[in-house]
Image 1 (cartoon, one colour):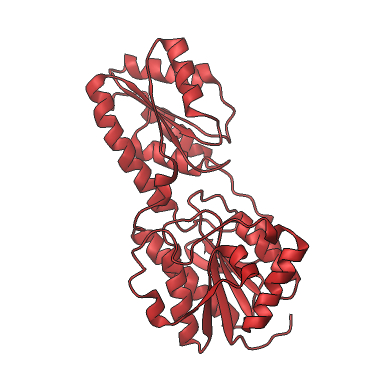
Image 2 (spheres, rainbow, N blue to C red; image 1 turned 30 degrees about the horizontal axis):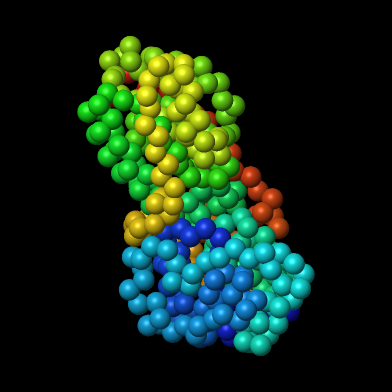
Length: 328
């Protein structure tokens, strides 16, 4: 692209919301102002860019949002943006509003949309925000830690009642097709077993024998954490009942994991990423995704970033197995 000075940026949130998105928006707006840039908030993601759904943002527009969950810019998925006509309308909105660059906060789908926009001549920078933590270009994504803590709190409460009744609980957590959230939560909550999509399920070994070993170790209640990418927690519960004669209680945590005030890690990381995204534009770079690598913030060309894969750290699975062989 022509290396021109960025005078006005647009910022949007897209895809699934994640705790800390507001902190990132706040950082983008205030850093942009400090660099002498104007900022336009695009509401409802890529669909808002097509429909010219925007709001001018000043420093006080982002007052008191650091601690708020969700996103003040709203979010939506856009079928229209998947079409060439829709993307051309988005470009027209950028030109009409005088937007020189767009900062897109979200996950993989958000960044694929950003890539398409960049190919039409609009500079973009992506900020990774998804509770799934499944983006290869960033060691950490905004929202993951808060979602983990929310799930752990819920599981701790479930454990209290499961222990009282000497029951088995099957808990389904989010994560799409990745098991990062489930595995992290399972270790932190002291689960009996965890089922993740990255590991082929052997029901006898991974569930039945884990419960049997835990019972022999003195446990009278059991916690099975299931990543949504594995399948239905209700089906897992039914198989446990069939093979062990138990009557498990199934809980699907669902979207509760996305809500709530972001914790310190997500606020701090989101703020650093938002600041860095503007810094990248001010230094004449674009069409990239910012992310964490070895504790620092880096920018990676968007096509390269989208091609990067993140592997589940299976040594963590071994940790959970070792912990489950004893009474909690």
